[in-house]
Image 1 (cartoon, rainbow, N blue to C red):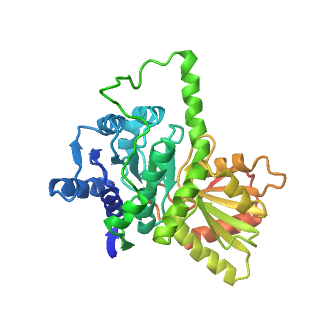
Image 2 (tube, one colour):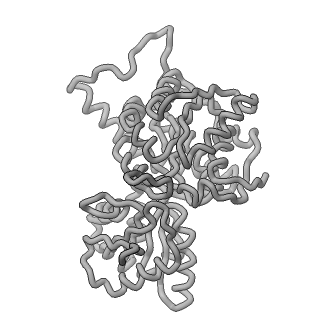
Image 3 (tube, helix red, strand yellow):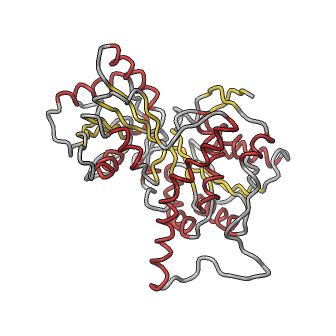
Length: 385
């Protein structure tokens, strides 16, 4: 049934439909609406779940780790400095191979204080062992959250469902909210692979001496390498039931494109308009939206970008000293290709700045001229530019 929902509540509805059993969270703008709705569902008996109020995001993840270790389906949500406070325990969740799902609403990090959108917070956690999936609209948010549980429970790794602050989290859109029976047919009750058992006591998270630590990290890498195949299987099953599919990447008019834009999140919607305008002017341009960031979908980006002449990467982030993170990941993914397109890095939209069609037109014009080295990141729409 279609409902008009803000992006945050699309997450809440998915968590309800997933029959999540333990929710632990601490409020922080702009993710608060997610857990507010879930706390109401728990208080009113709409969900048969335990909502744990904690004093910080660090404690919220600790509670999820404990609950997941006991073999129940768990959820939390965070943003920005709250996610940064969780950082230590993100490693513990992945290291314990626990299928926790978290909604992460992209928000800038300080200083100065900023509650608006950029990708600095989630990308700062890219090496913690969490799967990261980026969403463009409310429907994708709901669907991806449901898929995240099935994926997490298949590979025993935690999943971060990432959505843009305000542009998506607080924007209302029509969203198809499925009924419970249909969701149950896609997402069965959790059958945990790892679970504390009082009848067979074991320790979780104990000291790992050198003879074991490296093997534990190797198991995380092996699990990550299996994610694309499992993700494909999850999406195939989802599509048969719900008739919707997204893929690790989404290509628009890329088949014959000489120049291709690459980005993640809501900016892709604006970019498609720019591509349509450029196509109307006779330019062979396309856009590739990245949904999966961890693990990085190397095979998919190679497939769509190998025939392009130039690639224009939009990053709403900066790894200071090297530039845009998505651009660096693409360069790494395409490094071994015999025919590698030139990759041009652009940074814009940080701290909630709008990204407009005109900005994409500027990226296109600069890339055609290409009067600067590939290893430089160009900042678009600075106030002093």
